Length: 397
Ligand SMILES: N=CN[C@@H](CCC(=O)O)C(=O)O
Ligand SMILES: [Zn+2]
Image (cartoon, rainbow, N blue to C red; front, side, top):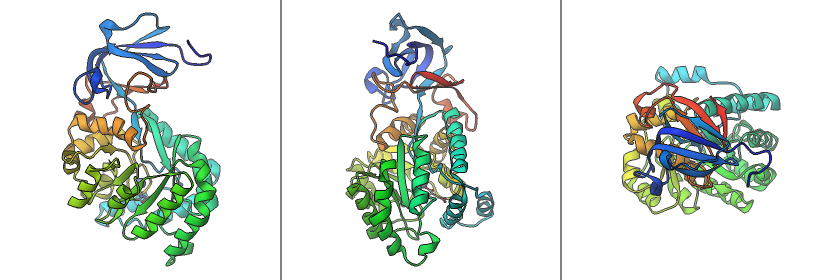
C-alpha cells in the first residue's frame, strides 16, 4: 500500500546493463542484468529483473534508452566540514615536498575561525558536488575543530547532511596541547566523546606516527565504544604501523588508507569483518605509492573505495575518478572497483539497505551516459553520471 507523501511508483525501464550487486539476480558478483528494469515503490526497490518480465501498474515509466545503471556510490570516508583550502600546500607537494599531515593544523585554525553558516555552506557545496557525481550516501567526519564546541558544531553540520557521522577528534594534537598528546587524549576520552556522542554514529582515530600511537588510539576507540559509537580507524597511510591490527582487534567496521601493509596486516584483515577502505585520491594528491589492492583482494579481504574528500590530501568528491584510479593504478578490475565503491562502502558502514538494488533496499540508482559500468574506468575524467535517483526520486538529471 502506497504511503502518503512518498514518491510515485516508477518503473525505470530499458536499462541496457544494470549492476544490482545481488549475485542471485544476474551475472557474477555484480549481479549484472542486461535489458533490465527496476520498479521503485515508496522510495525502495520493489522489483528488479529482465524488462520483458517487468510488472505493470507503475504510476510512471522512465526510459533509460539502453544506458547502463548501477547503485548510487556509497562514499564511506569524507571530511567535508572544514574552512579554507590548501592549494598552496598542494602546489608545494607537486614541486617535491612530502605530505606529513602538518597542514591539518592550518585547516583546524581556519575551521575554528569560521561561522556555522560558513561550515554549512561548504558542506552544502561539496555534498551537492558529490551527489551530481553519483554519490547517494555520504559519511562525514569531524576532526578539524578539536575543541568540544568546535567538534560539536562540526558534527551538527555533518548530521544535517548525512546519517553517517563520525567523531574524529583524535585527528592530530591541536596546538594548545602541543607536546602533550596524552593530555589531549585524556580530554577527548573523559570529556569530548561524551559531549559529542549524540551527534555521531562512529568513532575514528588517526593511528599513525606523528598522530596517535597504538595505546592512545586504543584509548580513544574504547571511550567511543563506551559511549555507544562504533569504531573505524585511519591507519597505515604514511608508513607501516599498528593501526590495521588494532582496528581488527577492536572489531572496527573499517580501517582506512591501508597504504602500507605487512603480511601480518593482510592476514589479520583476511580473517576479520573489518573492511579495508582504500582512498586512491589521497595517493594521487600526495603523489605517494598506492595501496597494494591486489594483495588484499587476493587474500580475500573486503575492500571499499572512497573519496577521502578533504582540503589537504584528496580534494575530490568524485568517486568515479577514484574508480578509474583504482583500476589504472591499483590493478583492481573495473568490476571490483565498482563493487568496492558501492557495496564495499555499504559493508564499511555496516549497512545492508544501500549499495545494492535488492528488494527493499533504498531506491538509489545512477544512470550513466554509457552502455556499461566498464566506462567508469575506460573513460577517466569524463562526467558520465547522467541521472541520480535517491530514495526513488530523480534528484539529478
Ligand atoms: N590522514 C588523515 N586525515 C586526512 C587528511 C587530512 C588533512 O591533511 O587535512 C586523510 O584521511 O587523508
Ligand atoms: Zn580521512
